[in-house]
Length: 116
Image (cartoon, rainbow, N blue to C red):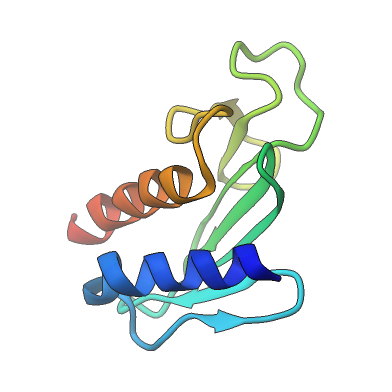
């Protein structure tokens, strides 16, 4: 649970301009509500196992470390772009990053997408 508070605090401190309200902490995730009406659920069970699921009106983007897709060079990291079955290499997070570093990487990615 402590890591979820760290995530929520970091997001609120550095990315408040893209949030429509304060992060919501659940027992297993942090939910972020963005100014465009989309949301992201962040699950970070241990340092190397995480999932960032961003649900937009007409698409989803998920970055996770589920041990699938061994053919990708970033295994176990991968991205689902637009829909569940469109899986590509993860160009956003790094397996050796700290929790805070990966949250920052993902939210910079979100910020760039929201600015377009």
